[in-house]
Length: 271
Image 1 (cartoon, one colour):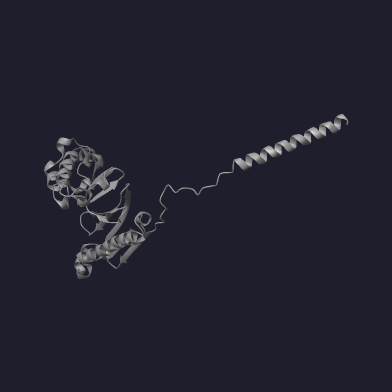
Image 2 (cartoon, rainbow, N blue to C red):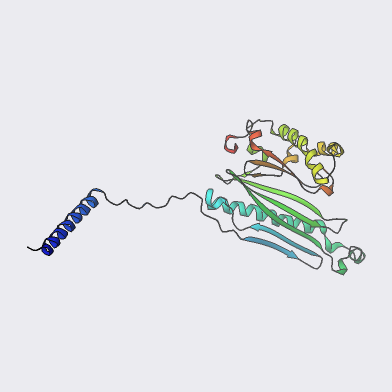
């Protein structure tokens, strides 16, 4: 046997050895079974803004509301449908109320001329919304803009806060333990924080802020704290124009860290 033949035999033997080792490794170390990816976020909800519109010779109205909410992914389809219906009904009722209060059809020709209606001016209302989210809630803050042909338009607010798990429409009292003095705490905190917030908005000193006006709008009563949003770990108390300050200040928000209220918050809404 010459050197060439010996080399071929040696190479062949090595190949057989490597194949055998490979088969043994594959038999004793099976490939891992691929696992389905684990979802880490809730499915996205496609949301379209829908509109209610009503127009006539002397009025123009447009109301926005969402076609769906994040509740569809967290509380179920029925809760989402109910929340959307609640907000749509709010829009419909707002349209009816605005038209009844304007009562343009009862205006005399002289009044229509005086108010500029014969020159194309109209009673107008628009309603739009913003969404705020937290771990446990979602909040829709609605801005209502009304031009009733006065010295200036008026703005109002309406908020809807829903529990992410149950879909329940929450009122301020629902965030707190039963019997907790939440109104007193909110009154105390907002009265303390408002002077600095208002001074910053108006570029004046805190000493110049009308504290009597603040006190009258922050009484520890339910009506004073109807409008609120929860954004992240902050409770935002929404004060519309005129509630705690003159119209020129516009909307005033007072942010209160939920951690500061944790001792009286219901357990499901604590940060």
